[in-house]
Image 1 (cartoon, one colour):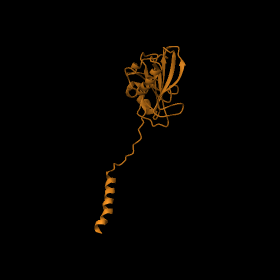
Image 2 (tube, rainbow, N blue to C red):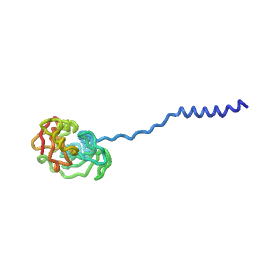
Image 3 (cartoon, rainbow, N blue to C red):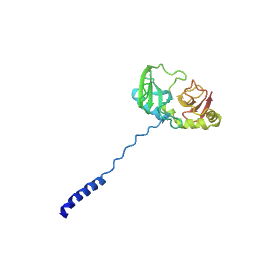
Image 4 (cartoon, helix red, strand yellow):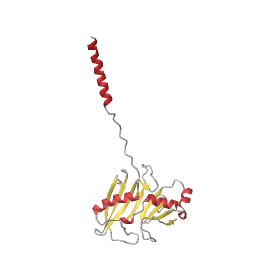
Length: 208
């Protein structure tokens, strides 16, 4: 009688031991999505533009603020839009790069927009080589903010909480493309922005 009563106990211990040997399943944390720099975004779009036209060159780019995405480090943005041109095709094409799906036909990752006719370089609407974009937007913002004669730190202190918009563009006075760090929603509505050389990282001028 004593011998037979041990069997249920032994069986129970075996089940408990097997359960303790099973590895605990851990929940995977969702991948953290961070806003990206202008240099990162333009190169992602450039990779796609090259498949459209091997001679693609960038003509301009701007950051896009998304209210549903928490702002990242200064000099980064949740989305960017660029215009590339092809002399061989005589066409231009817009591209976007976003870290999330958004309104206005904004898709996660690089996305190609419609093609349009392009008649060639005209003044400031002239493309430039990707190799000219040597300085990233985080460094450009830092230079704009820390250069004393830019007066950006002073302006930022007097106007706290202003959104930062960033453009990559050609300018009339300077040979290299420039990052335009704008305090405000756009160049047209802002009364303060700083130009930083996208090739050398040097402070160029303050626009008011």
